[in-house]
Amino acid sequence: MAMQPNDQVRPSMRINNRDYYSVRECAKTLGMSDHTLRREIYRKNIRHLRHARGIFILPEWADEWVDRRTTRKRPERG
Image (cartoon, rainbow, N blue to C red; front, side, top):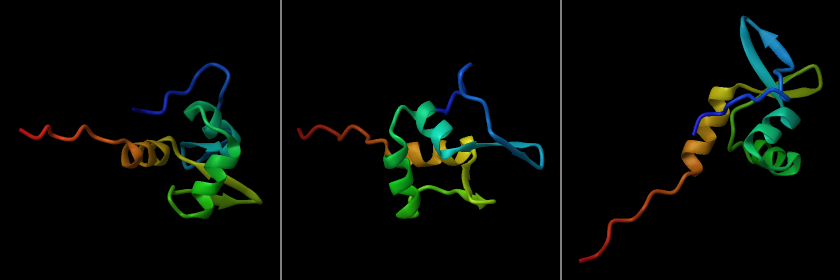
């Protein structure tokens, strides 16, 4: 499940030709609350960049986090 930017969410920071999303933008794109995403950042479960009193996340980092949290179907016992 790749993080797809929609028309309403634009990256708030650009460093070295890479677009970073703020916590609010990333949470909106992932369909979760800011609080949930901040909790994951606090627990160091998602990669992030702290810069000028802001927290920023690359779309690839959000994708990695989603992939780690995705459950896979168990094989059926037979």
